[in-house]
Image 1 (tube, rainbow, N blue to C red):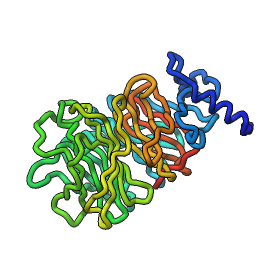
Image 2 (cartoon, rainbow, N blue to C red):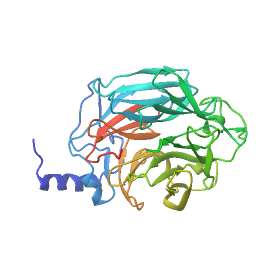
Image 3 (tube, rainbow, N blue to C red):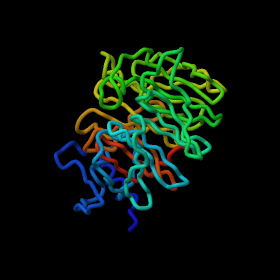
Image 4 (cartoon, one colour):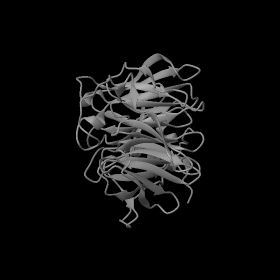
Length: 343
C-alpha cells in the first residue's frame, strides 16, 4: 500500500499533537502482541522537519528483555549484528539482524560499557573494572589501549569512537566506580575527562576536562569534530548538555568548544548522527521524555522516539543503516527510520 502525500502530512500533523497517555506505546514484539494502528504513538514530531525522518508504517519492536542495564550498541556490517553490553552482569551481548535473536557474545568482560568497531573491523570496548580501553584482535587476543593517565588508573572509561587515523577518543566519567554494581566502588583519582590514544602511545593524551560528566560520544559526519554528552545532573547542580568540539588534524587536540543543547529536564547519554548531521541522543527524563531525542546540528529539537523505558544508547544498524537500535534499561528495541546513519 502506498501512502499519498496528503495522507502522510495529515498523519504527521495528528502525530505532532499526540500527548502522553497510558496507551502511549505500541510495541510489536517477537512474541506476537496485538499490533495497533499506524502511525504508532512512539513517534513525536516537535519540528515539521522531523516528518522527513519518520516512517508512517514503521513499528517499534522490542527484541529482547532481561538485562540489568543495557548499553553501548555498535553495528557490525560484515556480521550483520549489533554488539551491546549488559554492564552489571559483565556481559557483551549480540543481536543478530537476520534472526532478531539475542545471545551472549562474551562473559566476564570487565563490566564493558561503550563499544565501537575500528576501521579494520576490530571491536574496541570501554571497561569499568578493570578501568581500561580494550581492543579485540583478529586472532582472539586482546590489546589494552589505555588504563592509566599520569601514573593513575583511569576512572571507568564509558564510551569510545574510532578515527580513520587509527586513534580512538574515549570518555572517562567514572560511573563504574560509584557502586559495586557496574564495576567496583572506589575513589576517583583523576578529573573526569575526554582522552585520545593510539598504538604509538604508552598513555593517552587528555583532550579536555572542561566537562562535568563526559558520557556518550559520537563523531560528526565529516569526522572533523565530535559531540559529547555531559550528564552533569547525576552528580552536580548543573544542567545536562551536549557539547561539540572541533578536532585537530591529527586528532590529538580539540578547539572551538560549543554547547549545542542545554536541558533541565532530560539527561543525555549515548548518541549517534545521521548523514544530515542530526544528533540522535538517548533521553532520560520520565514518561513522555524517555527514549531518543533528535536535534539538528544547531541544537534545534526536531522530534522524539518514545520508549517505555529509560534509553541509554543508540546506533544505526542494517544494510542501509536506517534502523535505529536502542538499548533501554532492561531491553533492546529497533525502529525503521527515513534517516541514514553516518558511517
